[in-house]
Image 1 (cartoon, rainbow, N blue to C red):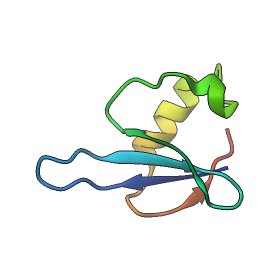
Image 2 (spheres, rainbow, N blue to C red):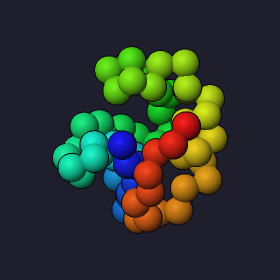
Image 3 (cartoon, rainbow, N blue to C red):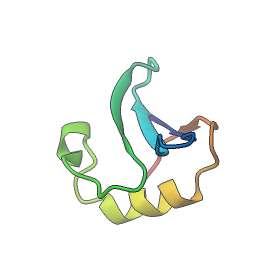
Length: 67
């Protein structure tokens, strides 16, 4: 699974994209909102680790999600 942080413009907020190994979009959510329904993506119980990763991500840089 891969993660990328997308920079918003003006009234559009920053977003996070989760993509599978084929780079197909599987989740798209606001970076500033609490993370919900992570069990759908196999990330249950990893909310704190994912939140800290999102804070440290650079905009526009795709990276492998390893938490």
